[in-house]
Length: 368
View 1 (cartoon, rainbow, N blue to C red):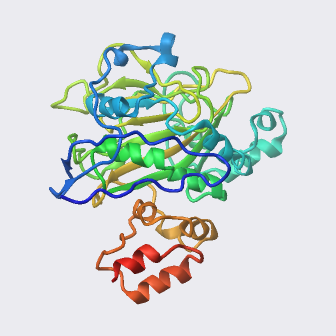
View 2: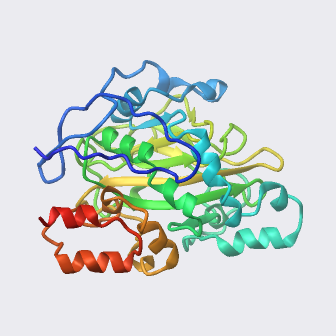
């Protein structure tokens, strides 16, 4: 059995603390190679009843604050909204730098072309090519995917938030795996009036080159960390639950009530690729909504992917971020942990030169 590691990192640097750890342990589960892996924290709890039947009328109540219950709900139902997973102080401290990347909502809605052009010109549209459709009804529209800014950001605080220990620890516990990778990392901003954001229900099958294996040890966790309060009129994700037919998971969304995943900033919406979901439109005049995407896969699951950091690791944003990372945090992006046969004394020295200021002592100590 692989030994558990300390999975907590330094969090968001600054005057704010991070949430207290919860005690407990989860049972060992096999990873994709069959090796037993031990998660750390929270424990397992009985799944709450009836939460999957709640709708917009009581959307504010769908979040689960207890992290053990939240992890179990994700395993049982394929989705969960973890209420206030990241402390509000940590979110607000990082979001102070969000406006270096996006126009403030009052600026964007003030009518000045420079602010709208800034939003369109600095975001990443993912190159989606959709057929021309009208403005009414659910559809995929190219402008829905404006507002993406890829990690690493020109913001040290937001970069640290991307690996916040409360989020990475929750992912490890929910997935039942210690060895995980971040495979999708980006911020997504939306403003009322850019386009009709209403989508049809769909599953994110474009994260995998083969059919998803929907069982413990193999599944990936898709997640949105709320950077702003996501109220019912500013486009919270709408969920329809897991596959209509477990034997044929891609055959239409299940019938029944729809779930509005509204929540306060710091909440984390986690779901699996078998969950049917969709984006909805912003109806609030002057409204906006900002999320940080943080999606995780088992280590070694090369068939799952979305964003790749390797092309940008020579840039200043990544170099300054990497210099603040613990071994566990760099491992989230595929870096070998201390003690791996990859490392030699010469390579540890090269690591220090590549990322000035990094604490390389864990790698060096593991050579002895």
